Image 1: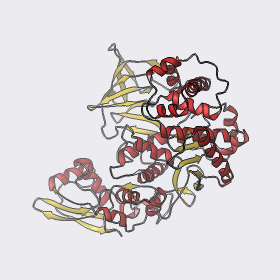
Image 2 (image 1 turned 45 degrees about the vertical axis):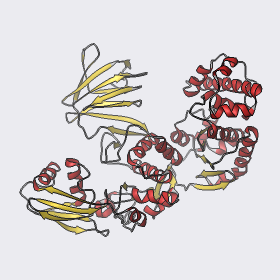
Image 3 (image 1 turned 90 degrees about the vertical axis):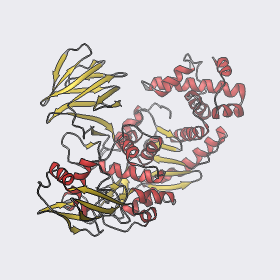
Image 4 (image 1 turned 180 degrees about the vertical axis):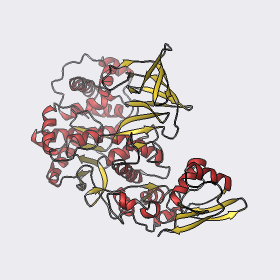
Amino acid sequence: MRPLVFAQILFIAAVAATGQTAPRSTLRVGVWTLWHDHQASVKSGAGASLRTCETCRAQPFENIAIQTTGNGLEWTDQHERMHSATVLLLTGSYRLEAHGESLTLTYPLEISAHSGALQLVTVLPVERYVELVVTAESGAADGPESRKGLAIVARSYALQLTHGHTRFDVCDSTHCQWVRWRSTPEAHAAALATAGEVLWFHGSRAAAYFHQNCGGRTAAAEEVWPQHNSTNRTGPGVLLSHSDLYCQRVGSSEWSTTLSRSELTQALAAAGLAASGWKSITVAQRGESGRASVLSVGANKILAEDFRLAVGRTFGWNRIRSNWFEVAAQGDGFLFHGRGSGHGVGLCQAGAAEMGREGYSYHEILAQYFPKDRLGEETTGDAWTTSVGPGFIFETSEATNSKYLPTISRALTEAESRSGLHSSTVIAVRAYRSTPAFRDATLAQGWVAAFTEGDFIALQPMPVLALRKLLDGVLRHEFLHALVEEQDSAHTPLWLREGLVEVWSGENTKAPTPVLTLKQIDQKLAHSASESESEAAHQAAGWYAAQLLTRYGRVQVLAWLRSSVPQSVLVTLR
């Protein structure tokens, strides 16, 4: 990834995108929403500051303790001075501690009081949120394709209009989608590879849900949520019940549990579903899939999904694992025997993982579980299309971009010729239709024309790059990044990776002798404060890489790329 003089490109790209809906770049996410904490503490990290209103001056802090006072806050600083406020706004890096748990965040956090408890809300880029959901919700059986399918479902769900919260968009619990506040490389790769893709139905974003195991047959949305048709923009009959042969191959995940009458009374009362005194539980109605949809609890009619959630929130989700069960009285309690895990609507994770294992793509996985929907670009709904070339695949939501296929092929050939490297994998090139869409997908700085990670290349709008006569050079540069990154190791310094690309791109022919040390170059390559600072660091990296190639030759430098540059050689460079 290399910075370019890109201010004019940004302007033209913004003009080109006129008339399109701007992509949703961030989400307000409720943090620790199940805990209802009354007190917490915050320890500052790099660049941490707090404000007590949107227009107030930011002030640094070290450690603060916070507690609720009705619908207000009291907080004590490190000097034990007491302050009061209605809201605290934190930025920078900080560690949050409450209920014996700690969490380090680097995103803005809003702390307020609601109904006597702390309400914590952070603002996450959409793609970072998707990454954290995939980390939390994927399992050991998942492979790259099933994780990509999960990422698209999670993104589609998050971008729906409402999820029942008034002060934030989504929560971090299974009420919405579970968030694990750390990521994995696998989840990051799945989110990045599908960034900007959501499910569409007849011109609107489709309803999207997932669950762990359907027991061999998925459920129609109306079985679980009878109000689904009247409240969901996608209309009736979209999330249908159908047989799932792939889940059946994994196994129906049968389960049994016994719950006493007192346990059930406690759970139902806590959820406001039934008072004490009832004697019996029977299945009053079943859906097309065979799942219980309505239960009779004494004289009360209760939705089976509400019953499952009430028991899960009180006694844990491993008791009533799904709505597909039989129930029988047993002594002073009830025996439940069922199959599957979760509500059963939409994507079955067990079946999707099996499809991925059998070689199906995420497109085929989503077609299995959302047969009425189609994949589309996040803001317009235009279909993403894939073209295959020699050594690459090209993904775009704009049909006119197909004219650039010869340019892509030529750039890859030139990159391989200049570096002497050849990829053992197929490199994916994805072109975004607007600068905001590119930035939201990659989280890259605005001055960056393209982004490469592993065998994935993301591009700013191709017509804009072509208009500025940058497309050939940008593609060649990014292909060089992909080729170099395939060869490097965990010990390869950033300056060497970036420097070799600079040299082979032909963009470093007039670089002056750098004043930056190798350590400083690595720091500025990783965290540039401005375009000019990044440009200087890339030029310096190219100068050092050119010295290595001149003194030791391509074969030796490539060997060091795969291992590390000896310290004795680094001394001679300095």
